[in-house]
Amino acid sequence: MRALLRSRARFAPRVSRVSRGRPVKLAYLHWEPADADAHPFFAEHRAEVAQFAAGLDDPELEFVSSSYPELWQSWQGRTPPLLPYHLAALRDRYALPRNLPPA
Image (cartoon, rainbow, N blue to C red; front, side, top):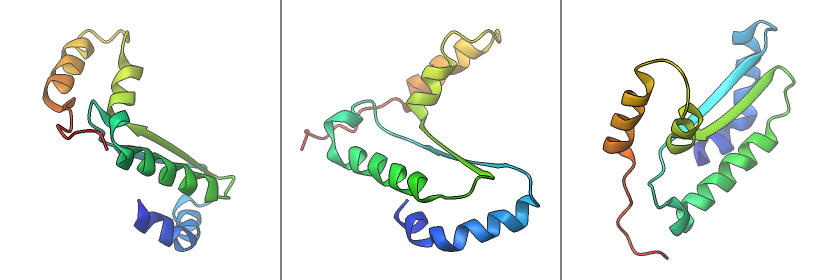
């Protein structure tokens, strides 16, 4: 994310060339452990993402950010028949604590 913050000025003109005047949605999906709130690193990362989003000044660019746990929560209760099984498998495999004592 820090590299994106540093290159923000170079990023916007490229989006304009690629989009040819059509709206563009830039999605940033990132992993966080189940105990992310116990570790300042993840709060710092969220702040950097918010700073990046606030610095984008292009009406044709929509920036969305989500952690995997937030994405999975948004899927909760959806209707596709296999989604609950897929969601459970994702959480079993990836919703792990960082296993470090809180800072």
